[in-house]
Amino acid sequence: MKISVGVSNRHVHLTRDTYEYLFEGKELEKRNDLNQVGEFASTDTVDIVYNGKTIPHVRVLGPFRKYNQIELLGSDLKELGLVAPVRRSGDLDDTPSVIIKNNDRSVESDGVIRAERHVHVPTSKKKELGLEERDEVILKTPSSSFTAFVKISDNGYLEVHIDKDEALEYGIENHQEVEILNVENR
Image (cartoon, rainbow, N blue to C red; front, top):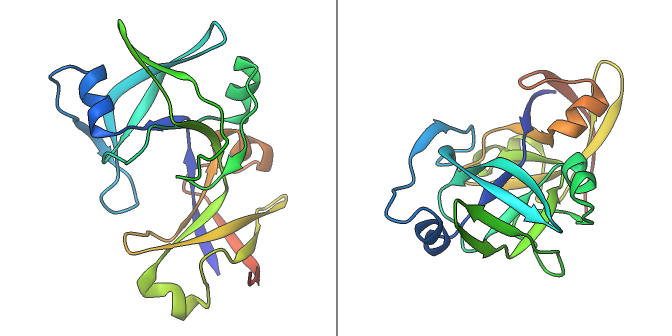
């Protein structure tokens, strides 16, 4: 079975309170929808500061979350001199913190991760595809293969998510198709 690739860049998820503090009086404005239903890239960006180094213009994604999560690329972590784990979104236990900054306002993040590669599967298709939450699948590209975990959700849009560094490593581009070869149930 073939599946489309969604390549993700560095981004942040913010709580409503944090957003309102950083962007004083501004409403969260949608720049464009993402494939996962209800999720979007906003017009806003923030700077990420750690150990005297800054990664500027990191996109804020919506909708608001219950935590202030930073998702960075491996190359970003190296640039900052920061060690952060590969994790599922929302799994911030024992992750490092950075400063989220907009102009003269700043807050500390709840955590920093490098996003785990995952295949979004809509709940309505999991039975048809024979996939369950946390199954590990092998995906074949024209020149290599890699694994990713299954993420089942009601708003899921069937695609695999990898970050920009991984896309370069595997020689694939956004919207390219890869093939699911094997499923290992957990």
